[in-house]
Amino acid sequence: MMRWRAPAWPSVPARSGVGSGSRGAVLAALSAAVLWGTIGTAQELGAPSAAPASVAAVRSLGGGVLLLAVLLVAGRGPRLRAAVTRAPLALLAAAAAITVFQLGYLTSVRAVGVALGTLVSIGSAPVVAGLLAALAGRPPGRRWALATLATVVGAALLLVGGGSSGAGQDPGPLGVLAGLVAGTAYGTYTTVSSRVLAAGADGASTVALTFLGAGVLLAPVLVVGELSWLATAPGATAAVWLIVATTALGYVLFARGLAGLDAPTVTTLTLAEPLAAALLAVAVVGERLDLVSWSGAGGLVLGLVLVGGRPAGRRGR
Image 1 (tube, one colour):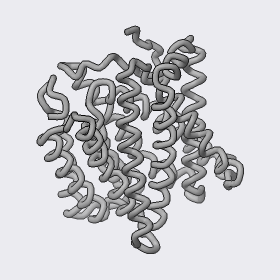
Image 2: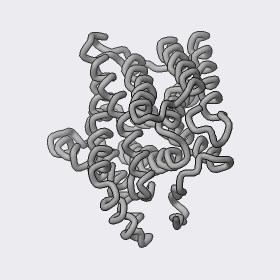
Image 3: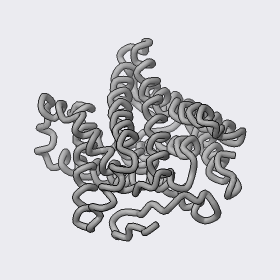
Image 4: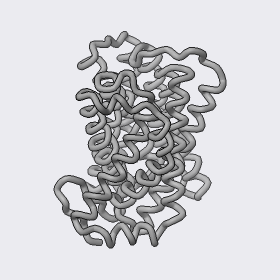
């Protein structure tokens, strides 16, 4: 399969899951999680008054349009058409899933706070991806289960111990349920996107079409929402970063990870996101982590090493 060699975006090779390709997929997934970990800090510094739903809409539509434009300029129109023809229903499902994830995650964070909302939404996603893989006859294995347990527990200690600020108004069942919906949607997005790539679709094209679809679904937010934050220099800078780095580049890297690893493994690796967010909050925002948070960070690192350092050629084991 031909590789997309445009310098601005990484290409997505065919699945091998073997040797250095697998290590590259691990690095790509971790890099995506690190980029996603900057979202909270970017929003806090650039658009503290912006409604989360409007930020999500700008990210989705902007990232999809940007990637689509880059691909068309690079002459990748045939790959875009191929992605649509090879897995049209899966692309629609991916767009719907990532839309539900963003809305569910934002609702959960608003209702129960950043710590619990992030834990439920992000922490439940690997479990959902693992269950979907098991239902498809490809159970991820004991090593993945141990790694996922370590990362989820580590994330819980990191967030509850002070690695994420912002208490919710009422930690009731609605916010937790919204987080579970978000986690289910994210695990579904990962699984569906993995199948799109397995059908031979190009990774960058898949991401462009998925987020373009999500942006269209979220377009009503841009019509009725407050967007004055985009007219300020900090807000515009934050929007550019969120569109280019955390959406376009981040999800292309995520697709690169899916091209070489199974969906449960990649979803577990993205639990590096709360770790990156916490460390960035310490370095940039000035927050402090207590002993519990640092213990959680250690558990997260242990889980990531377990799932990312498995023997090459044994996918999900």
